[in-house]
Amino acid sequence: MTLTALFDLSLVGRREKIALEWDREYTFGELDSRVCRMGHVLAGRGLVMGDRLCLYLPNSLEFIELFLAAVRLGVIIVPVNVLYRGREIGHITRDAEPAAIVTCEALREHVIGDAPVWLVEDLRSAAIGQPETRLVSVTEGDAPAAIVYTSGTTGVAKGAVLTQRNFVANAISLVTAWQFTPEDRLLLTLPLFHVHGLGNGLHCWLASGCRMRLTERFVHDQAAGWMLEFRPTVFFGVPTMYGRMLEWDEDTAREIGVNMRLWVSGSAPLPASVLEEFQRMYGQRILERYGMSETLMNLSNPYVGERRAGSVGLPMPGVRVRNLSVSGEPVADGELGELHVQGPNLFAGYWRLPEATAAAFREGGWFRTGDLAERSADGYYTLKGRRSDLIISGGFNIYPREIEEFLAEQPGVVEVAVAAVSDKRRGEVPVAYVVSEGEWDPAALEEACRAELASFKVPRAFVQISALPRTALGKVQKHLLPHFTKELS
Ligand code: MLC
Image 1: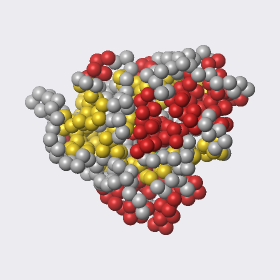
Image 2: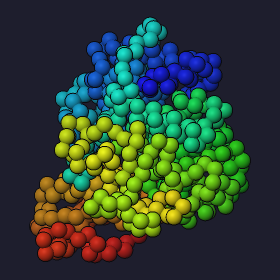
Image 3: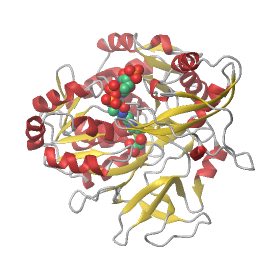
Image 4: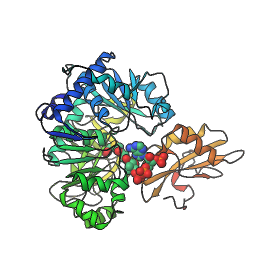
């Protein structure tokens, strides 16, 4: 099945129903017409099947229109985190070779590279006079729908190619497992440039035909008001958001809880203390699930049944999960292994990187997640750490290697290691340990990072050390870095 066929169940099948609250209410029919018009704009600018189109845009109605129009034309969307800056954007536009990068006036100054820049403000005006006839290329479900950049141990972001079928399988499986109906009301504050907001939020909405209120982002001192006003039945969030919601007053929490049927958490581990306190205040138990950009959703605590604190639950429909030892043998329940997954949700490979793609899979199409896990005797998986030194801050992934490589290029930096320090609000934040020569100027290092990297990747502190702790073979031992004690929140 293609995404267009799946989404048409709502866009065509529920034309009169209210679909979206953005600046006003839109029916599915109106939305469909807007997508048709945007399709003509894109086709008129010469986009054809297989072309890449970067979207460097905050959440908006136009983001949705562009995504859906591209999917119909077989154009591959490359979503770009709005917090990315020069270095990150430069890499993506060089690597994906997009026909254009769509951005807005406010973000334009950050776009570098040779790709043509299309302003969303212009596309919006151009769409007004377009016909409402449908342009749909004949694609199979195996056609790529998006390339989502995800960093790796190499320090350079790799493009995970997700097919239409990957997204379709994910949406159908979530709608079923989490019991979505057209009567649901989804409040979506997650960014659409990541698979959590896009593949879960946007696609569950369109596949189920429920009503969605979209906001530009999660603003913690406004979100309580949105919830009281919109009365959502479903909310998708990262643990930082749930942590923030514990700061709201108890009456508000109780009131919000009355209409809600499902709170889902993902993208970073949910502390058991947040789960318990949230249940006390809101009257419901958050459902924790586990996914990745390369695989979309893999495991979830059950909708009906025990939602176990600290566990990411059981395999999603259609997903096979194995816990394997280093040599590829299944490990016994209760023992630590590396989590491997297989199913229709697995991406097609890394964009133009056959070697990295081959390295990511084992025989039989099993994808190596890089996460270490244990399975209980009754089948629940619990994540116990990662093979790589990935840092997750507020639900955004940070690969230390990328920051280390950037800092190593700065004047006076001899050697550098970036490691995670725990943070009450964001879960983890990066801290840089630097061996330097000449004058020690941490402010200059911070400024350089701010200019070229997303704000969540800028180290929260720069610590000068005399040498990096290394093994006899020269590998940096991050656990031996001086313990960082300064309060960061
Ligand atoms: C954060 N910022 C944003 C932003 N989100 N700016 C623009 N648009 C957004 N969507 C910036 C803020 O301006 C600020 O910048 C800094 O980030 C911190 O924001 P905050 O609101 O002060 O902090 P906080 O209350 O901690 O909330 C942050 C947050 C954000 C939770 C809203 O971290 C967030 O939206 N996280 C979601 C990440 C996500 O969707 N991950 C999914 C990955 S997919 P400054 O310059 O002042 O620091 C994946 C697979 C899976 O992992 O399984 O889901």
